[in-house]
Amino acid sequence: MDGRNWLVTDQGVCQELNAVEDEKILTAPYRLYQFLADLDRILDRFDDNAERLKRLCPRVRRLMDDSPWLQLQYTFPDPQKGWSVSMLYDEPGYPITVQMVAWEAGRVSTIHNHAAWGLVMLLDGEEKNTFWQRSPESEFPDRIEKASEQIFSSGDIICFLPDAIHSVEAMGDSPTISFNLYGITTYDRRFVFDPQARTAKTF
Ligand SMILES: [Fe+2]
Image (cartoon, rainbow, N blue to C red; front, top):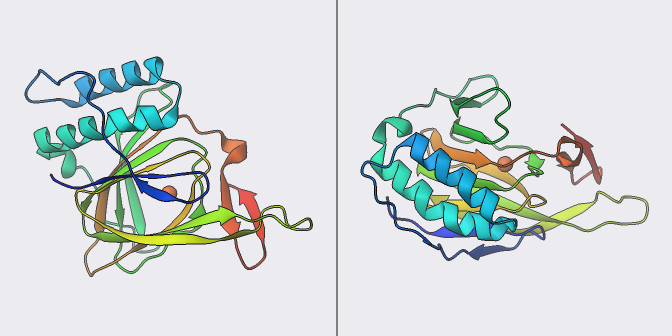
């Protein structure tokens, strides 16, 4: 699936990310367990999150191309919440999140960071991302303001640094489907923000 790769910085800047392929993928099809082994190796080898994400983008793209069954491993959004999450790999003690997420058309997420590096590949539909930056005031250290917004469509990969703050709106009239990968979450640094009240709370 063709598309572009993007990186959202901790300051809410969204810039194109150039993929790096240090090693060719020699196996066909490229299976989930092989991807997970490559993921572990890349995380061990590189400490810098942007360097990790540059190398993960082409592998995620290849995984999605080679494993059409993965693209079907989602459930329809819960009508109450507006979204659903399906874990693709779940092992006790395995700290990386590998999941499919579906959002009901028209829904808007909270404004949040992930406190972990993240990679989202949009597989179906269009999503508008709004990126926010911290703009603290002495009385309101968690004040944020809007930095930019961008619409992504299927095939696009959006990567996030741990303090990137965003909110997502599902566009169109059918659910959006995405493959999501997140690193180890630092829960006491994961926030949902309220720009009107100029506050943030952990979740
Ligand atoms: Fe998010």
